[in-house]
Image (tube, rainbow, N blue to C red; front, side):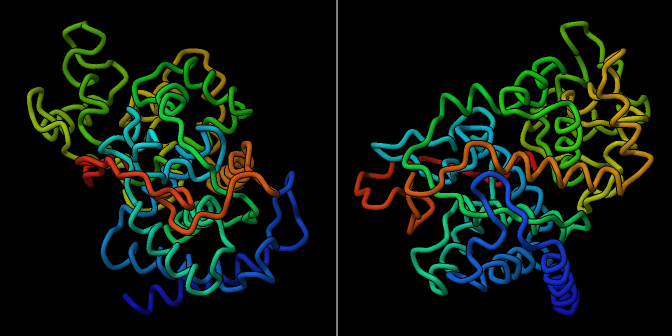
Length: 348
């Protein structure tokens, strides 16, 4: 296993070197820390790889989900990492995150290692961005130029998290609306949804599809008839809502294009996944078919969309701060009010 980590990490370094350069997007740049923290990528990569390959095969999916949920709330500013205190209304308790978002301890470990190497230089928002990128590649997915230079927020926004993060049972038009608000188009919606090619989801996120869909007394007709009884056995109607199911029943820990092939045979686990293919006349269907037929096309589109998402309203220049602790604003001595947060029983 150690050899696998070393080999994979070396491959990431080569890939990052090849796609790096003078590329910039807005005020962000891949060379932002070249002088101030040259070992940054290696530090992040090493910790993510160690956890992924030795203790937690879900962590890659969890970290990219954290990045996604961060960027959809006031931009990619690390606000999701802030704990609840008497002055911070943490996004961790928003509907989409409470007892669901995970991986915070890994970000803490990365931050501690980065602070030891280059104190006061690298933002938590950038650490989360790099961790998400490495998670995809280490799981078999594409690599891309990582644009950096974000600063950390001084506050969280739980109400915005409740409003703007897409939900697992939302109809296509609502998903489209939430992506449009962020400046993301239909191609971005489908390609970023492809991150559900790895990770897990709790029964509570899809059980309404299995027994009494839309109060019809019958299952969702867009579930494969052989897949349905498997899900019903795993998630009985009155069973434990926190039981986990693979988002991709074929290659649950690998980043590939099987997610789209699963949608074509009605094996999308979440309603918000299956609607991309099963809504009659939807313009998302052509992208599902394209990505199912051509993994390289999916990887290219996914990388483009990740760069685009990562540039949603970043704090740069003198805005925000560089947190010393990703969970707290610098100088904040207010009392922590964390209570029973963060059970590892989550989507992704």
